[in-house]
Every structure is written in structure tokens, then in C-alpha cells.
Image 1: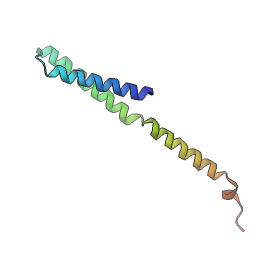
Image 2: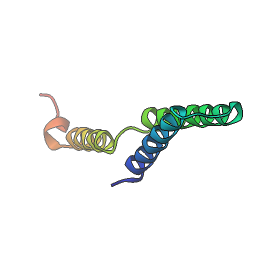
Image 3: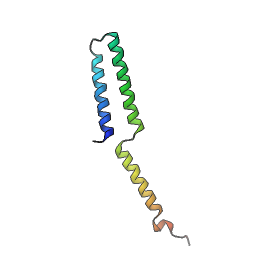
Image 4: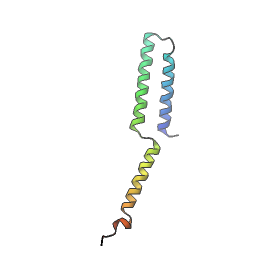
Length: 82
């Protein structure tokens, strides 16, 4: 498992834990703390999801790049027009 997947899993687990805490009786201070942490975890997870594309996507982009650059340098593409 790559680092991104591990971090996403950890954020999901933290979010689940905080959501479960909200179902219990909490003082105002505890409630404020848990809501703040839940918001922070959701934000971190969203940033991780949207700022770093999945590994499979990165690999497909890299393959497309290699294919396009190798096609541009192939002899068929560079033949002079007669």
C-alpha cells in the first residue's frame, strides 16, 4: 500500500472515531474539541484526495507521456513529405 492510501485510511479512521464520539455525552469543551478535530480531519482528507491524484492515474499519465514522446521521435513521424 502506498503512502497516500495509508494516509487516507488513517484520516477515515480518525473521522469515524470522532463521529462516534459525537454520539456520546460530551461537555461543551469536549464537543468543541471533537468538532474542531473532525473538521480538520475532513479538510486534510479532502486536500489529500484532490491535491494528489491516485497512483493509477499518475501511472496512466506517465504512460501517455512516454507513448506520445516516443511516437514523436519515431521514423514514421519524421519522414519528409514528398
